[in-house]
Every structure is written in C-alpha cells, then in structure tokens.
Length: 77
Image: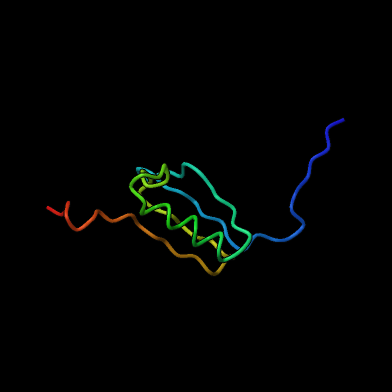
C-alpha cells in the first residue's frame, strides 16, 4: 500500500512559467518567502528558470500579476 503525504495548508500562490507563449511549468508556493525565492530565479542567468520568458503569479482568482524576464543592460541593442 502506498501512502501519500501532502500539505494541509492552502498554497500562498502559484507561479505559472511561460515560454514562447505557452505554459511550461508550475511552482506552488506556501509562503511569501517561497514566492520571492522562486521569482528571483527568473533573473539569475545561471539558473534553469531564467530560460522562461514570463512568470505569472496567481494568488487567488482576483489577484494575479506577471513578471517578465528582461535582458541585462549590457546586452541591450
């Protein structure tokens, strides 16, 4: 018999990771600190999550915002 263990609390937010206009992955955050750590990864060029174009943060049905990856100043054309 397999026993599944999960969280009893509601998530603080969910982050939907977008690449080329399509959702590629999802991160569930259980605190504001989790959310901030995950979003910081979008701007770290050595991190896997930096290859996504956009992070869409959903906190509830009426509270959503987007964070787009921006090129470093030195790479501007």
